[in-house]
Length: 164
Length: 206
Picture 1 (cartoon, rainbow over the protein chains, first blue to last red):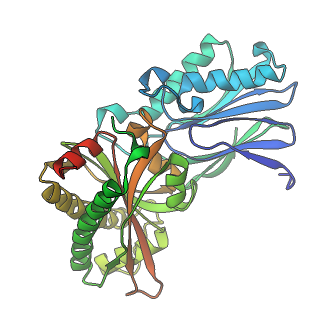
Picture 2: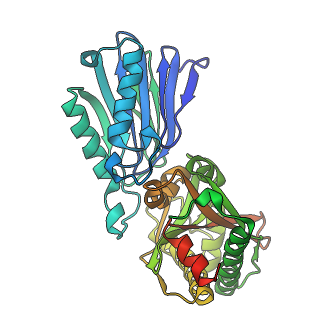
């Protein structure tokens, strides 16, 4: 990996855009999902660190758009559109959605799986293909998307590093 | 719903006192279980963003041994005990009287259950002191232990809060022991859900 590559960090419930020569990273994904929309021809990508499946859940009047699958993807899409990307040129990759604990509280049951399903549904409505994904399981993930190569690097505690 | 960012010093001091009472009881229990001296820090109360909460644990992808317990009753919330895996091993080896036990071996069920028991004692005695002090009924769900990225673990406790807020109140106590060759620092976090605060303050008459 190029040492000079600039890293754009995406915090929890945040959204960010980055260009060629940069990498989008987010760390410590448990039930959260890191979703990346990218345009290979323009060499741009946006990432959201999604916590919850649906913005209808919120009881806030203002909230961080990246927190929910639907508003997170809309924001990613808008950021790319502002840079001139067309929806039919966009592709997606994602990772996360683990079930860290066998929680018994019903609200939180399988929240990771619900996040993944909500993202898949939303992307299918938008006709954006999911090129690769690494979801589910019981372990945390840290991810890094290299815009130059469109490779998503995934690191876990026990399984080491893989690229999708 | 109470605006978490508008709590005054009296409220924050009361939450600190809750941390003191809970952690005081937990320290005694842990010390008795292991037959070693354990100290605790003065609890700190922070009203901070999710990002800052995860930084308290050492950073989002910092690898920690953790026990995690949800509790229910007249309000709900989460308790976490975070410690480095190497330091967790010191506790585990003391408890099992076996210097070969390590939680870094994913297959080691004995080490995991010893660590879980440790967390169980801590969280159980903390919660008991809390319910006695507030004179309300709180009971814990099944505790769990894991070794993983701190951010991935801590987020599980923020799900309920994230529906209503981008901030949470977290009460932190550091448990220390200089009994071992290296100093041990375990961080205990009480993370009440948003529904907790009105109940806590009304029980305390403020």
